[in-house]
Length: 528
Image 1 (cartoon, one colour):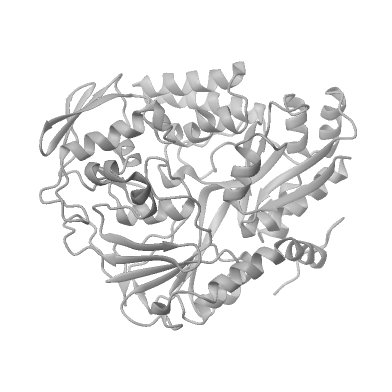
Image 2 (cartoon, helix red, strand yellow; image 1 turned 90 degrees about the horizontal axis):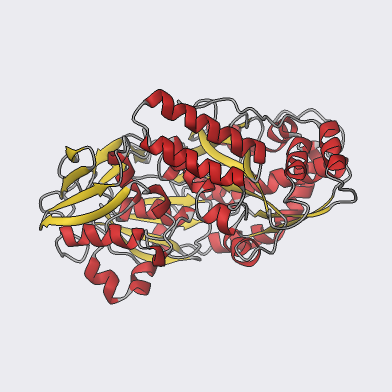
């Protein structure tokens, strides 16, 4: 392996030693967990089932009304179906539970028929009542669904007959068909009978049934033989190990305990490429910096901008990610079809950072940077600390498991600044959806705490106006203006967009393709 060039401060040897110390406790725990996986894998990954290793821990439940964790999202894509889904690889829409494309009755009315013979895993028929129930529970403000923010155009859903539903829109919305993908259809009777039980082990209509879910032993799936949709399971079983420690994931693949792993450590890509299929796909997935804007001095945009300008993103990408990312020059990665370069781009500029702090009247700033224990994040945050220390900001790191950090620090407002990964592109890839995830509802209201500012309100207004706009060029101009505002305000903004490396045994799997989103997909994948 070629040594990286050395620069001021942390060299590569110091860097790896430092990040190794930060992750030691988590690595030991994850390794022990990985060594006690389900006996069905037999330690060899042999047989007709699929064995895989995901990089995130199990966090929360699976109810698609509220769950957005990486593990639950990936699992639900195999277990529950929306009417229209997005292909996990191409991100193009296809009819899942829908029998055919949505029928447009008029500008604000659509009808959708359910696939003939579609059944849930308990054998019950999927009906229009289930579809209406699934949408209404997401739209109900009392349920606080994260996905309601993606459906501002939807006025209501009603049953036409046992197999048909009608959607009434508040205004014409060009992305109606593909946006149906954010609501996965659940069985009304089962959810109403025991929502907590459903949340722990959901019943869906997808090609796989989730039969077990445990933080230590992982997830187990079985083929749903009665599935009659477009993506039938090609393997009788799946076992997903949840291995947060990167070295343990690599070992699991090399030992043939699993056939595929996500989030290959960048240091291991070249080594694994000698014996496995390895591919890095450019993604929207980002490392973002988020400020608690209700805490001083982070309510001052100059302070937020200063800490962005101070980060040596190029060094971070070269050192921690071995070049496998692109510094953010806009909210979207440059490969996105709607990319525009932001009016504010945070290049490394320590002098400007110091000047902004001085203008804000801030000196002797002490910051606790809260971050998750995701492997690439742990590799990056020491370099953020180094950059901030270099401009006189005394920085301490608080590294912990994602679910715990949000529950104990973020969602109760007991933090100053957070650096964490984010990837709403698992739900869709259009600008409206990606921006609504971070800048409408939950995040600005209960995490970055800037929803009451004039700028944040303007972003929501622009997104709403763009959603109503029928002229594509005008819609894109509104999106660009909104993206410029979030860049300038820097309450929550990407540092970089990264590449996602996946490794798999091509001799053991047929039809497998890596994703540009978090997680793994085994739709149309079988054992070779």
